[in-house]
Image (cartoon, rainbow, N blue to C red; front, side, top):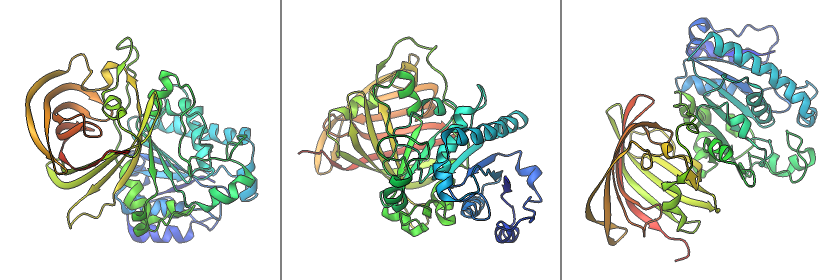
Amino acid sequence: MNRPFFWQVKIILVAVIVCAGLSGCSQVAPDRDVRITRGYVYYLDGAGGGGLMNWSGGVREGLVAAGYDGAGEMFSWETGMGVVADQTSSESYKRGKAAALADKIREYTHSHRGAPVTLMGLSAGTAVAVFTLEALPLGHDVDNVVLLSGSLSAGYDLTKALHHVRGRLYVFTSPKDAVLGFLLPFAGTADRASGPADTIGKQGVKMPANPSYETRREYGKVVEVPWNEKFKAYGHAGGHTDSVKARFIEAVVAPLVLTRTAPFSDTAAEAAGEVPNPDFTRWAAFAPGSYVVFEGYQEIDGVREPMRLKATLVAKEADRLTIERVFEPLGAATSQPPLNRRFFVAATIKPVEHPLTHPQAKIRDLPPEEIDVAGRRLSCQGREVQAAAGFVEWGSDVQATVYSNSEVPGGSVKIDLRTHMEGRPAVFAGRVVEMSVAGK
C-alpha cells in the first residue's frame, strides 16, 4: 500500500498519525487536491518497515511542522517478510519495485509540470531510491534527493542516478550508527554488493576510481551532511532511525527540500575543453585539516541575519577535493541548527560553470587592501566580478567583490557576494576571523 501523507491542520495530523498503522484507516488529507499541485515527496522506508510498522510518521510530522505545503506518500517496496528478508532481497527485486515507483513519478511530473519532486529514502530504502532514479526515462527528473542512514554501498556508482537529479542529492551520515556498523556486515549492503560492507550512511559517498568528466560533474550534486553533536538537540543521537525523528526532519532536513533548487544545466555543448577550477586551485596548496572561519551576514529577500561559516579541507586527491562547510546562523532569535555539508570540488571544469571563468564575465582588478586576519595584517588583492549567467553554487546575476591572499586556506579573505537564488535576491558578506594551516 502506498500511503498519501501531509495535512494542513495539526489536529488532523495527530489523528492520522495515530491511525497510520491501522488497516482500513483513510489517510487522504481534505486539501490533498490543492497540495498535490504544489509538490510531492516520495518516501521509501527502511527494511522491515513500509507496513504496519514504519518510520514515516516522523518524516510526515517534521515536514508539515516546517511548513511544507505539498503532498506525498510512502511507497512500500518491502517483501513483507521482515527486516532480514527486505535487506537481503535481490537487486532485481528492488529494481522491480523501483521501476514501479519511477512510473508513478513519471505520471506525476507529466500531469503536474513544474511542481517540485523530492525522493527520500531511509536505510535500505536508499538503494531503492537510487534504483528509482536510474529507472526514470529521459526528461523525467526529480528536484532533490535525501538519503538517510543509507545501507547502499559507499562505492556505488551514482553517475546514472544523479543524471536525473536537478538539484542536490543529500547524504546524511553517522559514525555512531550501530546498525550499519555492527549488524549490516552480516546481512550485506542493500544493493547486494560484494566486498567490504562500507555504506553511504556510515562511510559516506566514494567517487569511482578514474572518474570521467561526466561522473565528476554529476558528483558535484552530492552533499554529505555528517552527524554532529548539535543534532542531539533535535533528537538525533547518531542512531540508525534518529534521522527520521520529527524534530530532526523539521529543523535540519526540511529546509533542504522546501524550495526547488536551481537545475543543473548541460554545459558540455556550450564550451569545448576544460579549465582549472578556481575553487580547486585556491585550496589545493594546503593540507587536509586546514580551515578558515568567516563571520558576517546573509540577507535573503531583504532580511539580514548574522552568520558564521567554517570551511575545512577534508580530503585531497589529484583530481578532486572534499570541502566541508559548516554554516551557523547567529543571533538570539535564530532557531536553525548549523548546517554541515561536504562538497566534491573537481580540478577542472567547463568555463561556463564558474563566474571567474565564464567567457562573458566582467572582471576588474581593485587596489590591494590591508586586512587583519587572525592577528596578522595581510596585503590582499581585490577583484570585482560580474557574471549575468546562472551558476549552481553562486546563483544568477552574480556581482561580487573578493579580496584574497594565498597564505589563507581557500584564498578568500573578504567577500561581498550579491546574487539571486531561485529568483530571490541574496547577499553574503563576511571576512576571515580565524584560520589554521595544517602541518604548520
